[in-house]
Length: 123
Image (cartoon, rainbow, N blue to C red; front, side, top):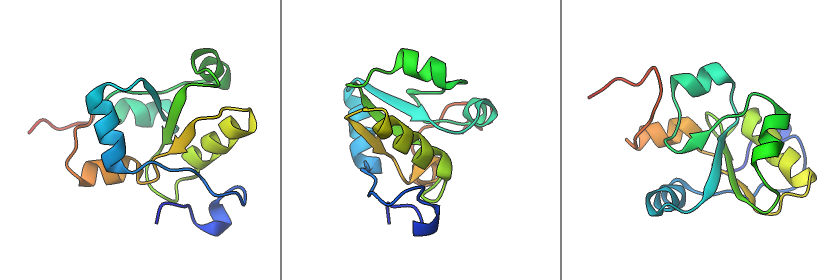
């Protein structure tokens, strides 16, 4: 299931998604994507997917991300509304290449993929 719960979807249009393996491959190949963690600064500093960015204000995001950039939004898991809201706002503003990594941080971590942040425990 890669769509949020229907009552939490913040809209009726389906959300374009990207799976964990496709995202991992893009990051490994160095494809220029804007991987945006939609949670707050504390959560980003604690733990995030390497290569991702966080913006403290909408103005900072819209200054750094252009409408034709490939954008992937994520947060913690499939029913997390932060990435759904970011996805819907970007699409509403005319961003044409936006997808959501619906599995989010939990799916990435459960797969044993690398993470960065202040709360990462070294093996």
